[in-house]
Length: 234
Length: 239
Image (tube, rainbow over all chains, first blue to last red; front, side, top):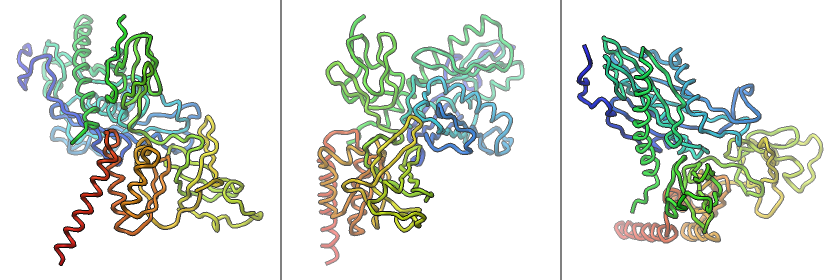
């Protein structure tokens, strides 16, 4: 059966309601919250700072270290086992790859920039929410960046192409394809592209166009949140 | 292509945002050129000076620079000197030779000069490409700090805490009776009467919060006036 109406009665190309805030963690050098539907991501940036253990130090550039963590109570009923897992390590790695192209850490040899992404509440699209939050937090930390990074998941559920899948759609019985995408909004370059499922070539092309458009929407939210922090209050 | 500037002076821009279009503008610090466009590289405030566009960063860690006076904390005592934390990604080295004009005999116990945890005011004399930092204590005003309290402010907001020709820090000193030393790295040492210290901390926090706004000195004097009034009111109530 075709998927004709979304579970949460959104339009097929409609994002879930988004809110974002910068500077939510005062102790961090930069921080941000990114909330999309029922998925909430907090990102805290520390550094550049001293890097230990010493063998990780790189004398020609600073390094970026990511921690991605879903909180035990965040998911759908089942408790998420706390601590690092195979899944969280992979997501931390792809997040690092998604963010590194915009960062220049060569002025900080032997040091590290740590990003902690915490998800207190999840409903699919966590890596995308994490990347969007981390990009804002990096900007807030005052690091040199060529561009921001905006990320969204697109996909095909029951033969219908749509944007920003929630958990129900991702777990749709009659087949679901989930494609998280991260895009540099000003240059249009793609820094994250993963896929879970099957899709036809033409459909992939179409759905990536959709992702680009949706990332621009997310970029506007990120931009607004970053500027909001420095609004003059009388 | 039309030559236009897309932002106003004192606008906040985010990384990746196009600030101006056309070859007649020059990108300053914190901006870069890509083809015809000038693009922001950091989160910060735009400063337009004729054809040169600059970006004043509003956040970020302290990057050590030569000739900066910084407030530092001794974190280790070594064979030939001290390692000090300068509130940046890199720690600095204070050698025996640069620490004091006194003669330090061979094998002397260096903790009698500075021990772990002590705060000092020092000057950065050298920064290498690998960010190895050397500091010196030889110079006017460079000394060990005793008593008082240390607070951290963002290093990019230090110029506002100091004010034009020291106007802001003088204002805070006058109104609180405190002795204040501000390091370029964002560490501020305050010493005075406990009430005065608290007042000074509040004032500096306010400056930090409002650093990117104009008429800052007026706002701070207003803050002190208001404080003075409430204090009097409380005293009156006691009677």
